[in-house]
Image (cartoon, rainbow, N blue to C red; front, side, top):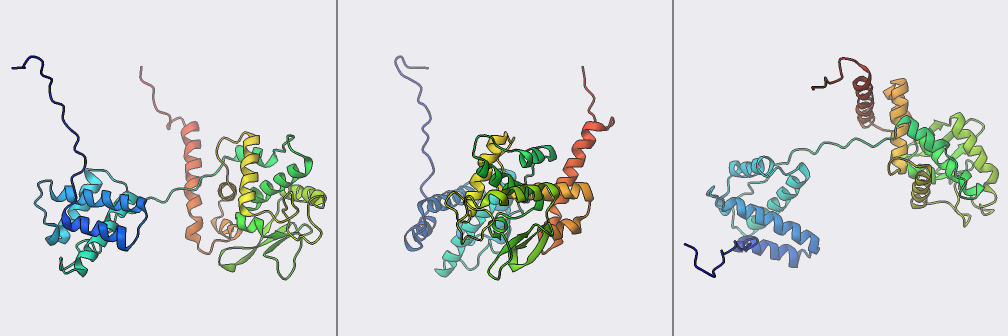
Length: 327
């Protein structure tokens, strides 16, 4: 019976329970002795609270006598009940593994039940690439909103990134001609660029007709910017070599002016180069050489992009791929 004038009591959110002493002791250790950043301490706190919640959930877990089987069960619960992703699970396990190393050093446990346990591997994200039409439009676009010298620079930069599949550091390191100190250089006569890639591995990449035309157009006006002693191919308004950050900024602004459908960065154009060459040729080994990959496995990710492209064509064109519409 409700008493007149009385209001029903609302449940009070008490928040997380205080940590058990052994867990709080470890948290104090990482905060004070290891001097972890506040953000890291917050992550540790959350992981320790989750472990405590598991131990107090009726499963009858004794944290100082946790077996490897029980530890594996906690991993399964994170994946199944709480649906944590691989990265989050790996983070939780890292904290718990550190906790038991700490407890072992203090003789509070006899072994680490989380040693050897690993979270499921996170799927490797596919590189983002522009569609052929979008990439070609971006490469051909010439802004009329900036001065002709800046427009020629941007056009050359985009054509070399997309037309040659260069890394941004490789593009940054290009000089106008070969010299003993050059990381890379352009050879307009042979229509090639020579670059120093990862692992100090040199390679030569052919420059296509469109990229060569953009390169020669830039070289025609480069002297209006470059200081007399500057050997860099790409130079900024101060006459010195453009750095990677400046190249990214130029590309982002160029893509916005061109109306690109997505955020464009130098590596996206490299991915687009690889994907489009593979779609046209089907020659994975050739793409590996053009990109300068040491291992073919690194290049094989582009076969997945190629399959996605083919799957979209199939879904759009094959009559048996279309889903029936129900009234």
